[in-house]
Length: 503
Image (cartoon, rainbow, N blue to C red; front, side, top):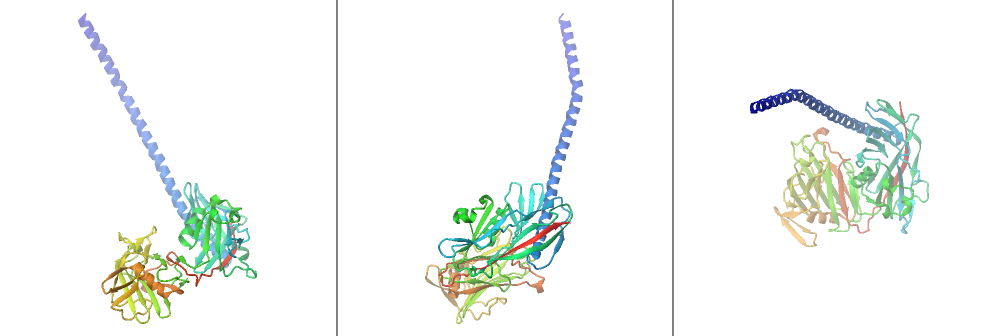
């Protein structure tokens, strides 16, 4: 009996083992096929999504290029520089449409008579309109002369700036509004036709006896209501001399008919004190009015955009009688287009003369990538930032001024005596150092209270070398004003309509 149980046991066990091995092979094959199919499906799905996203991104970038060209063409048509214009929209996958009611702009004069009153300079009907290029959840739009991009879930950002210029003492604001022709939308390749429509309206009206020019009191306030208000805010904060304020900071009547959740408000003061300026163009100037004295200078800095910094130079200079000041940036040779300007090496010079004495300070081998210093830095766009009101040391030198300086400088004195920021006399001789903010404020104060700060720069290589981008470069010159030479702000505001039609 024991043998029989043993035999039965072996037989049963052997039968069971054989069944397991027989079932394992097909199950393994099925699992392998399933895993392979699942992996292939995942790769195809993710790959297709990545390809689609890349294609959409590339298409939107093409849309940015088309809209930037559109902005230039629309401005020429709206401002009367040319007649009817036409251009190709390219072969994008998105759709271009015209929305006549998208966005509004109001311009007010606040506190003109000193009693806190607010008077609207535009007539309340300055609708901007917009031309949009949409692909999925991404939009590129032309509005108010600028180009804006809006991606789903992200704030709008500026692609190219609007037609809004506040330089020196004049606000130039051509409000470019959009009308739709018979064809208001286009998908795929097409041509767009732009033409000026209606008459140009001017604010304030030249024949108006109560014309606000010149603005001698208060401030000018621009209220922009737009789906792309974050991009407008970016422009106002980075490119103008005004202050972005909250709705609660202005009289309620200015925002009574405005959706403040989609609005941005810019206030432009009508008094002196400087601010942030676009470079006024080669040989142009910025008016300095009412500089209060040696300790009045708060900020003298610049953001320099140069495509090719090889052997470039930039000069900021001013003159008042016999007194002259020149801040001079002298870039090294051998730095071509492959060298970002913030990485380019340059020498910085500050020179002062009063007809009898000449002072010369220098900081050599500077660049924006040097760590641990306040004089230079790189911007987010890899432009060069230079701050003449920093605490970085310059060295006094008796060496002659560089050959390319705008002013002709005589022999340099053996030593320089200045009044520092604490009001103390400080004397430095050849080879001794002093923080740049200590002497630049003194020299600028000697030029005040009123002078023109001029900007000049090189193009080099018979015009084929470095190309300085004056429109992208900025100058900050802020100071305390004593009221003896306040800015007088002039307004030139126009509303210009352009009709857009696709074919």
